Image (tube, rainbow, N blue to C red; front, side, top):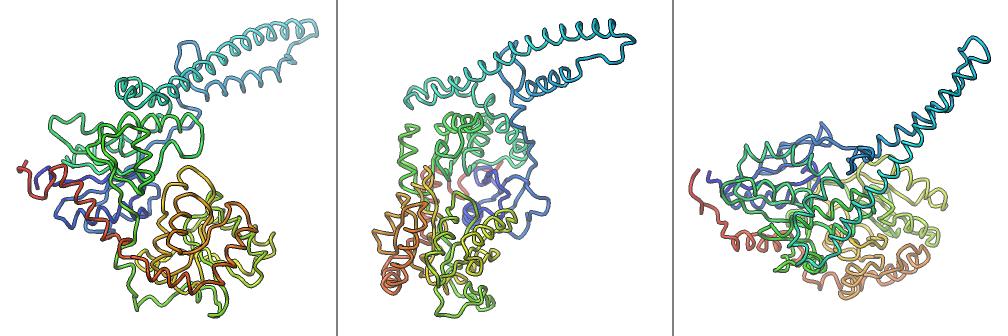
Length: 491
């Protein structure tokens, strides 16, 4: 097949569990392209077969520990880990300063004095090198922050500075490239569809090395500067995206607010096209062979109020607020449909016991993607209590679309974009993020007006929230770049 019809779908996950990547790869494959989804091996049991009509390859990526990140400078320690190791060594020497093996007291005193003098000198040298390490590291961080703080046009004129900074801040990014580069070279794609910032850099740098044109499409799933943490790694990722995004031939993203934010942050010439993370049409159908539903899984009668949350468990998702809120809702149950996260599940169960609602919390395993909507339908309402974080303010989560297609009224936290859509369309109620009392009040309003909210959902144009309605945008981007199936000459 012609090179221009070979598409590498890059992502720093194991592919199979990444719905957006799988759906995109499947759609592009159905258009006649030869698609390879290239991801990262996180578990030896992760499947690479039967995911879709495309090939999957997973690579092992070496992982740098934070303490092994190189520190610039001649006299400073090479890494912070080396500095910590030296500090521990000096502490051990101080604890064993007295030489008790000397044959007499005078000899012992002289030997101890000599060892103390040597130790004091080494400690002073260590102190100087430690201060240089911290000073050089801070200078690196300052250069990175200053570079990122420049207007996008100025950054574009000084890309070489950014290129010099990110490998020092996050060496792991180079490891992804080392692992993926041989597979890309062997597959020899004409198009690389890069999902998220890690894949973006790998794609752009591969394209630059080729003597022929390789098109790069960047699919931005989140706002990188808005990710949690103010570590060297986070700073490195921000610089990494900023140095490569301008080399992408086209940019896709997950919401209009994020598209506009990417333009402002990076000075993009064109606003990214928005492709929502909607479920496929087949996931909206009833599958007779699947005989489970969330209410039956909880062994609850039809008249019992049942809230449902579907997704990963973390403090950022605000589930502790929802559980605490159950204490103010004596008849209401909550089902959490989540992946197998033993520690996270234990946290929820303990939180429920502390709030006295242990018998009304039900933790259920994920169901297959194509039956999620069917499984949800018997709940009374859905909840999404996530906390205020930059990325939470600007996107519609996947589960929003699942809830809508399941016909469930929603109780959502007052994160900006999600709450505005829910409010504007009359799909549910918002509450103050982190407030269990306000959560309970919103639940009462939704349960009292359940039929009105369900009616609003039937009036909403849900067809626009299907994956099939989004694929025209993807195909339009490929065609705008002059990428058409069968258009390239054979290799």
